[in-house]
Image (cartoon, rainbow, N blue to C red; front, top):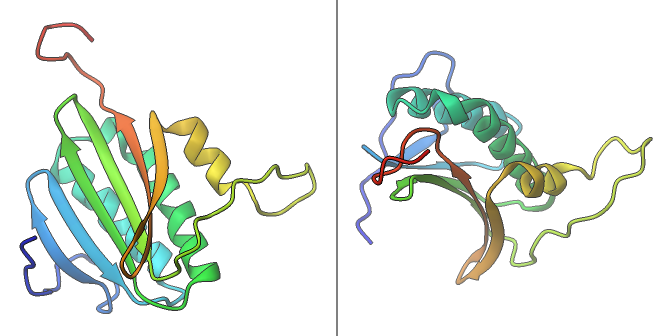
Length: 156
């Protein structure tokens, strides 16, 4: 895997603590410290990147799901949080959120009065597919969204 040294992307209101590891057409990757501002910064970077890629149709749902997953990582993990986005053939968008905690998240049923516990339900309902995988240094939760528009065969 090619690792590009971190650099700061000039986005108004984005914390200087977010490092962009790679940003090329169809691929973006960031690393955030496990700090309270990480969720806001992730939302801003995801929104800006999808706008640059011309993927406004999936921006709101992508930002919502990234926000939920980064919030979960902040709640339970103490190390850096990674966010990666890939525009894939199909057409689809693959988004991954990684953290150093090896335990996969648990989907649970939230009661009407619960203030939390709906993040993975949102991911499951709003995405085409989703899942988790363990890595050498933690876990990754990923989801895939279908992109609007005609397919290569001309069907939508």
